[in-house]
Length: 386
Image (cartoon, one colour):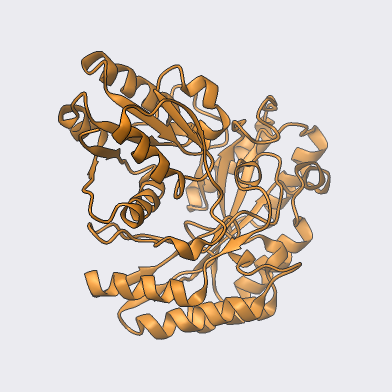
């Protein structure tokens, strides 16, 4: 292997950043390259190692890309990882020389050592990272800042989601001291830090048979003191959301006290009690409406995630979601998602149900008042660009 080249685009920048930080831990003296797909196409040479990571939504684009790349450089060594590759490893071997399944921070060491001895080939089973504090959030050799992953895994087991299958077992959390040190590094590089967090459920930080309010407040208190007036602190909003089951008056008061965001994202997915049970959601309509009331009382803008076309939906279950939309029209914003059977999820082989026209019209009626974004029906012609 002459050079390690990481191919990064806007859809995989967080996962590539984690790999870069791990690469620097294992190989502090070695150089690496990070390029966009366009730049990498012309830069790569046959004795390089090209590393890719992608989600299901961009998998087709990356398959097309590496197919064309291999036409130009037949002997180029390519390896892919990420959520899609973990769930469809055998399929990906048709296009890539090697596939890494699961977590990559520890496996990157084995991959690079294999490449230096010859070629990386076949399926490499990723090793589970037991202590997230063993790996920095931000690489040091290049400026690559962004949201901080504070939780890996999820206390829920939602049937439509890849996370419960990808990160099995107990939740893993970064410590407050470690998080603060990474924020200090970000401040030293840019002088200003907008702090956001990555977690499947923002209320699950240090989750222990329930919400750990003390840990969440301690995290936010320490981060707030660290950034002072040199940054903003966001919690319970993009790129993470809150499970309504974790929302209480106490949590809302904590967010008001320490955070800068005035928008909160709540995951509901369906307003039907029956659908909540089928999906294995921890929360339902009652918890969601309670959370909405609590946040509205503090003048937050509420965004509610809904998935349309879920398996097992019926006329009756769709009617419950319709009533929810009508009840909260003008008070909350709907983020609509068409159901997409994700590889590796429990519902990976399920077929979407047809969304009633009445419900489609109800959602689209919110466009005029700026209270909806996203799609209700999957656009078959939509192509993810990398």
